[in-house]
Structure formats: C-alpha cells, structure tokens
Image 1 (tube, one colour):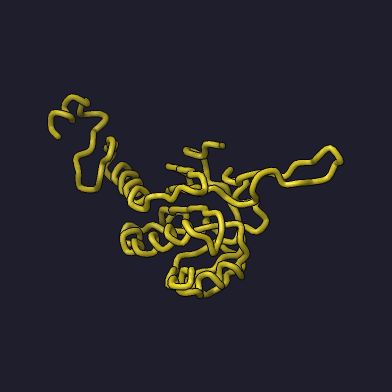
Image 2 (spheres, rainbow, N blue to C red):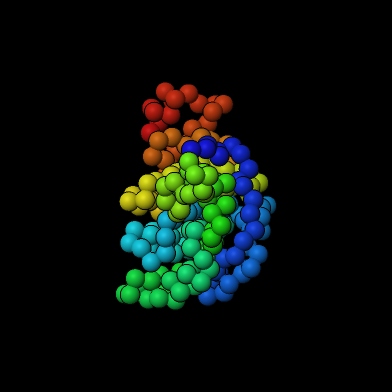
Length: 210
C-alpha cells in the first residue's frame, strides 16, 4: 500500500455524476486546487450495504464541510450509469437519492490503481492469459487533499469496515487549524480546543494547561 501523504494527489480526468443527476464528461479534482480542500474517498460498489450508509452520512454533514470550504467527492469502479441509477433510487429501496456531491466513475480502475486502493491487480497466468487476482473494486480509501493538491491524510479500511465521517471532519478541522495558526493538534483534538505551539510551548506546559 503506497503512502501518498506529503505527495501530490494523482491527477485524473473522468466521468462523474454531480448534483445527483448531471453526468459530467470531464471531471477532475484540479478544479479545486487553490480554492478548496478536498475529501476524496473510495467505496467498493453501488447498490451494496455499508457503502450507502457512508455516502448518506457524508451528505448529512455536507453543511459542515461546505462552511469550511471543503469539497467532498466519492469514487468507485462502477459506471456513471450505475451511479446515476443509484442516485435516483430512494433510500427506502436501497438507493442514495438526495446525495448531491460528485460520484466519480473509475470504470477503467486506473484512479483506484493510482491511489493504490484497488483490491487486486491484473496478472498473466501460466498460459500467458491475463487474469485479475483479487477483487476489481476499491477498498474504503479516504484522502484529505489541501489547496495545493497535496495529500495530508489518508485512511484505508477493508470492505466490511465503515468509516467515521466525524473523524474525516475532525481531520479537516485539525489541518485547517494548523494552516491558519501554526499550532499542531494533539490526540483526539477537536475544533475549539487548545492546540500546541511548537515554538513557544513544551508538551509539559500543554498538559499542565489542559
């Protein structure tokens, strides 16, 4: 598994469904560079079980991401038509209708591969035939990308393990606090709590002042 933290996020241009219904032919994260932080996350498949709980949870917290000028973008190896159908199916029938943030189609699996979250790979067998070893879908990868296009946080879960939207939001808050104040954020830090000045405060002073 590649560690992308501190590196530029891999670039791509592909098809996505935005605003819950509009198919965009040339979608790229480059549109956010210099403007917004990005939470870019992968999920295994449309029309499954854990995936809609995560996607709907992100949508329910969108106001909190938006007030921090953060774009949320999802991605799976499904087609744009599968995304569109899922986005137009009510939650009562297993869909995610009401979700408005972009869902990227990685049908070629190149985006998942470049972010190193693809749960398998193509290999040649002993008969020189190309086969896929593993599952041709993405793990639950999440990447927090800053305004310069650099990955500042990544998390990868196996498929049965749903992520915490609260933790994704906490990492956004921590990164933005550091960028704005130059203070580092200790364990379990939340917005509004005391952080640590690297140049003017010792850890003992921080702990004493908690």
